[in-house]
Image: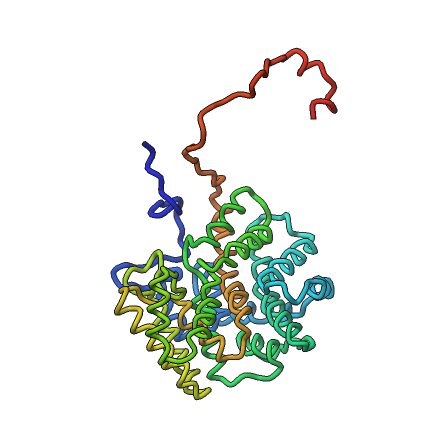
Length: 386
């Protein structure tokens, strides 16, 4: 009998030079660099360059990317119009997915799959998606668009476009850390989706749109939203025990805990938790911190399952002022760098991704009374043949 690997668990389908988890140090590596070191020392712009090009940029290369990103932040009128046509009740991930489609449909180079063209598209998405996310949150609040500022770096400008005020450096620093930690994670569901689409030689925008669809699911990118919904349900640290009793008794999945790759704790969590701690102090949010710590301790003691990156990032985005529904689009803004790096890597050594399946349906059967009449089938007009 065929050995079925549900969810492709344990199946190695290709090589990648972009990232890996080092089991010896439990570190996530981007092009060989531990992500915690990148988060501690680099702007997100430099990490994007690293993922796309394989090396950290020189000062001149970083300056060129920064100048490009700052000069391409403004949303084109057709993208704003497309966003405005969507109902306010639509999930923000649907809005971002649609806006990326419009951007792709407007790009005359969309079907040029050369490395040079795809890198240009990658840089363009890197620059445009923050404005899409920021504008969508503002319109839901009945607020107008805030134009980008070319004197602010990526993280400061993202927060400026969202909230209309220049952020404190503590907040921008924590946001930068979150973007770096979310940027890449090997063949996860959305990245693999992007590579499958790219393997058909579809354009880069199509692959990114598919990846956004995969990321929307709560078992993948939507988990950071689910963490805050759980916090809202529990309310205070004193309610953790009874809430967890009921949740476990009903076999409810507790979002923000566990990971397919990490069995002894997500290596990104300590870095994001440290960033969250700076926000807790900045906003004097001790009640939130107590709820966070109590739920983590109780769940780990009962189940032995540790937090993943979504557990600290959800509360961090909440403290920054983002609406809960905006959390996963923030993930998109970060992960588009990893997705596009993988799309270009797939294109460089492409093979159509087309796995097999094991059929387990009913045996062959036939329509009662059916007698093949091959001659009649051949002779009848094409329109009659359907």
